[in-house]
Image (tube, rainbow, N blue to C red):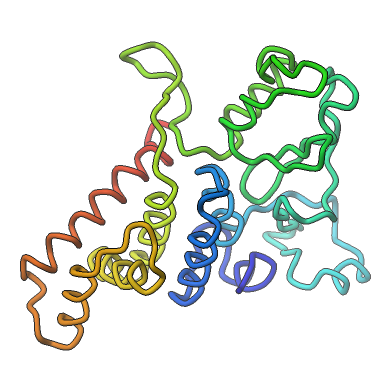
Length: 265
């Protein structure tokens, strides 16, 4: 599977073209581990694989570094940038945030998908809600937000991935509580990217097929059968049995992306 360390650099920074087979492979991996993942983990996995994130490198990397990490650095208008790593890569070292009690957090570090926390027991947390609810060893009954410095809480709140909208609800004045289903989130991210090259309806139809083939939680055998009939020229694009599930996928995608990437954010 192509990672940000190769093709993504050549394609530029941001939303780069991705082959459908790459997205299908990612989707299959995510569905396989869906029960053990948070929505923040799903989003972090997607951003880490398909949306390049760069940091400013101090000067030109040495010839030895360029040789040791091919595709890891890129020159833009005379300045050098390095590709942010995935959270699971041990080569990236973070810093203990100031004011955090010793032994509570091993490190907090930036990654390709935002920030991550590596706890004293070796866990890597990338989901915002999981991080804010985590109880440190020295205060097992107190969530992290009650015992950690405000600056750390601010970073977690605004720079960690989540399946919930950041900020507060204007109606209740409290933080948004409703999240998104992990399977639906994964599918919506795939549809979003496929639509860049295939168009929205074609992207939705392709993912309907993938759901059936991968036996995902959103699989719809009747809808997949309609897509196959359409591909074989046996069904019109406007046929109800095809258009209804296609529009349902697109509605879910728009709703979920509005939560994950709201225009006001």
